View 1 (tube, rainbow, N blue to C red):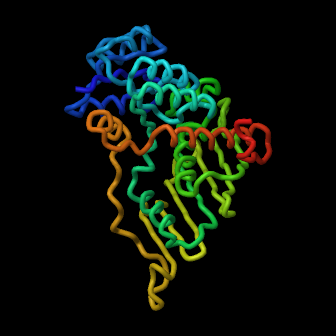
View 2: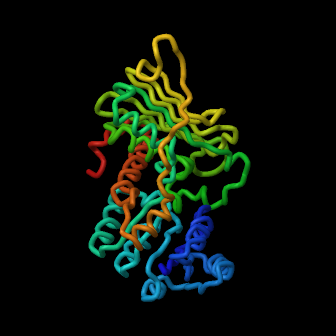
View 3: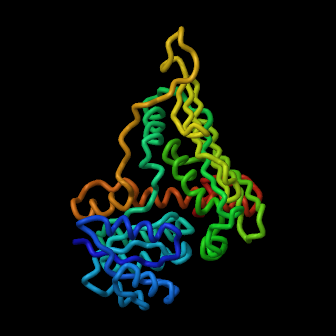
Length: 334
């Protein structure tokens, strides 16, 4: 039985991860730590497990095998380095950390300790996005010229997000840092490392972080990607569009389906868009990948490299927004 400690209930997905762990027969949440003791103690009572006010004390417990990190993003580096040094396997909510430098410190600690690491990138497990990846890799759309991916909700406009999700220190940003992480890692996964980024972030609400944001990326092959997110668009379906020299793909939208067009998909007497029904099987959820990787040594698809890549995208996006200029990826880390 894999014994897992939940490190903070700060993130909105923390309770969901605990449920995913506890429904399994080979893993169980056996401890809770939280930077806010009252919150942690109440959650531990819900989970019928001990609450630890002292993180070092929890990490020193040989009865705890692994930790699920749902703490504020600005403490990820400290928490995960200490967890790795204590020999605990690590699962983390995105983003991995606020800077690539912090991510690399985490990666060094994880690698040195030889523990398993997984970051939650759920859209990379979805059948429609796996299909998009396959089309691009197989060249069925020709050379990709334009990509657009949008992931948005009304968490700010409808006032259901917790107040601490607008804390610029704890979060390191607003809509793009949180919800926009999905569009960022999908863009990186589908097209590779960009060469430059230009952002436009603004606020419709009175919170101190952006709630409506877009970042444009240019890639070595001259493809352009639009990564869009928002906390103020409650009627905005997920959408992924890929346009190439020999075809196009549209995922999501109001109908929430997958459509393709182009000469490789349609006969000369059958023009237009075709709806795709036979999609790849989904990958296991990130928590499942992590537990199975620890217990059975099966592949973990979302690891250190993917976490570092996501943070690099965020660093470029926020530097561009903050300085109101285009940021070259070659200048990052200097």
